[in-house]
Image (cartoon, rainbow, N blue to C red; front, side, top):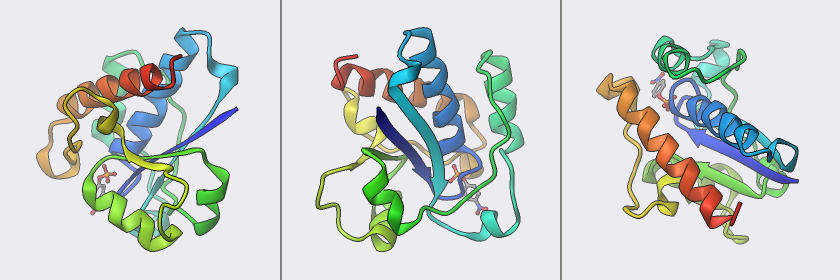
Length: 152
Ligand code: 4NP
């Protein structure tokens, strides 16, 4: 079982989108039983508000026929570092914030999702850009590249 935790700032836009896009991708490839997939935030304000998935993420997942369930924001915990095999962040600042919670990445588990792509880069935050389409296609690219990296 490969345990993957997608992480972004708020856990309401990018990381739940990645969680459900990646889940669909592994299901379509017959790999569902090989993965445990979840997502988390680096900040706690959305957890405190019991915030669910952002409307823009729901809208693009629905438009792209990606099944999703309700997901409530939760902040990453220090114990997640030992539990998960891959902690996949959306941008550089997530990487710093994750390590401020989990401690240094001694087991090389923390990566940006698009570090596996041909052009490594951040996934911009649609909370600020409003561009959920761009986020979706970046996540598809990163998820596919990550599975190639795993040779799956
Ligand atoms: P996310 O986007 O990190 O992709 O979930 C954000 C969601 C909420 C906030 C910031 C970014 N916020 O400030 O509440």
